[in-house]
Every structure is written in C-alpha cells, then in structure tokens.
Image (cartoon, rainbow, N blue to C red; front, side, top):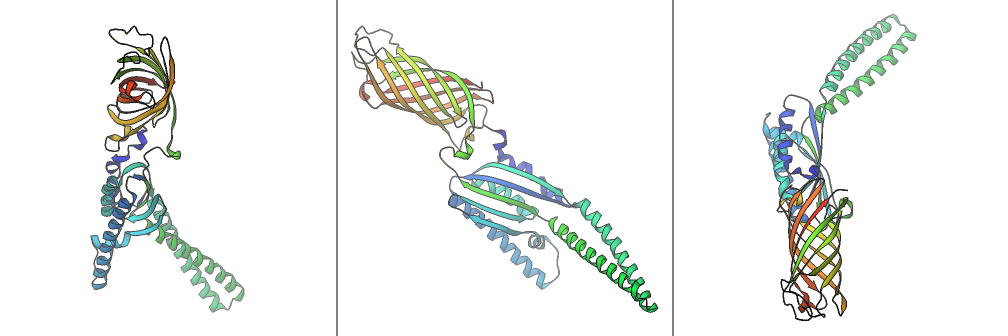
Length: 369
C-alpha cells in the first residue's frame, strides 16, 4: 500500500543515468532490496549476469594486450567489477560497479528476480572537485618549480641556512602535490560506472517482523451465511448479520466481533433451532505477487482466513464451538484513508460440522481513525 514500494518503475527512473554520465563527472549509487520467491534461482541469475560481464572483461583485456584500442569492450573492463559479495541463510548481498550498458541490462534483470521492494538512489557530481583540484595541482607545480629554482640559487651561493629552509618547504609542496594527484586520480576513477548495492531477501508467505506496518482502521462488515445442510430443529438455512471489523496491520491482520440472526424467508417455529450466532474471530489476508501485491487502488485480489469461536443460541438451548473460514476476496477500492472490501468464503465449524457448515459472503468498509 506504500507508494515507495512500487519500485517496478525502476527501469524508467534509472535509464537516464547512462545519459547523465556522458561527458560529465557523475557517479550514480543505487541501493536496491528485492524480495525473491526463490532465493536460489535469483542468486543463479545474478551469478550468470556477473559471469557474462566478466567474460566481456576478459575479451577486453585480451584485445588491449594485443593492440591499443578504445571501445565498448575496453569501457566494460575499466568500469565493471564485483566490489563485495556475502550470503546468509535467507539473503544474498552483492555490490557491483557497472558501466552504462551493463547497468541498463542489470536494471532489466531486477524484476525477474522478484518483487523490487525499495530503492535508494543518489548521484555524486565530481566535476567541481575535479576542476578545483586540477587548478590547485597546477598552482602547486608552479610552486614546486619556484622552490627548485631558489634551491639551486642557494646551492650556488653556499647559503646553508637558506638551503635547509627551502628544502623543507620543497618537501612539503611535493607531499601536498602527491596527495592531491592521488585524490584527483581517485575522482577520475570514481566518475566511470554505476555502483549498485543489491540485497536479495527470501520472500515470506506472511509479513516478517521488520515489515509489519500497524494501522488504526475500525469499520463495519455485513455478512450472509448459507448453511449447506440445514437440519430441522437445529439450524436455519440462512443467517445474516453485522460485525465490527478492526484492521490492525496493512497486511491485513484484523479482529472481528459479529452477531448473526435467522434470516429464513419462512421462519421455523421450533424453539430448538439456532436463531442467533455470535462470532469472535481474528483473520489475515494474503496478496498475490502476480496481481500487484495489494498496491493497486482498485480490484486487489487476495486470499485469507478467519478463525475463532462462535456462540450459537436458540430459545431452548445454546452451545459454543470453534470455527475456521477460508475465503477469496477482492478489494473494490483502497487508499490511505479508506477500504471497501468483499469476499466469499466457507464456514467450517469444528463441532456440528454437517449441520452448520456453508458458504459465506461479507462486504466491509474500514476507515483510518
């Protein structure tokens, strides 16, 4: 439900980076987290990508040793490398420096790994630093030449005191010049390629602790229960009622307290027939990764369950039983403030199963409080 998690648009966002690097000193760094349904398959795809890029590097190095040449292959060799890699039981992390062409290919690979859950991008423009350091280095080189001339004069005049001072100053200029040239070289190296820090995490069937987002969304639910095999003197064929439904997480995890009553078109006069049902339940919904993962505003498909206890009562008797209700649902509308939902399920009592089981339908409305 968070807009920041709709990172499958990453390709359209990242494509211009290759263009941005042409002729300017920009380095792009990107942190990406992917939840993969099959962690081993995702790792295999990344390893295949790295092996293919490494093969291009080997071809480039062989060509460069044979004859001086600057071209696409040499560009790959100069800017592709594996910076780091680590594996854990449920995750895989790799950092890659990529040239523009490989970066676009890697970007196209991301959605095939799983759900791109988050991305954090930053660009570092070294143009100003390069220009500043180049000017400073030129100044220090002139300084060095001036000290060398003064030092030669001191040698010719046998001015030992002045010679020692000039020597010390010249050493300081040379040290400064060395540090600045090293920094300038680092900036020049940093300008090529794009740094990608990728973390692949194994997708869970239910929200992990770190991904739970609590909400405060009370609401109301209208429900119908059509009993499959109603028994005269025990159960009616149709019950309808209203429940208070409280959403606890965006997952969605919720709690229900509801009351249903006999809604037969022809009421049964038997006092032993269950006339009212009271439910206290909890439930959870699961979105499909093939249908938007619940991120759409309209028509999010999901499955789920409710489970809890029920109190059945009539004029002459009452009884408790546990129940479960698996269902298939469709969110009709959802935004940050409201949710309109409906679902079809099947009520399964653990006691009196044959007499009380049946199809259920519920429609609910929740809002942020």
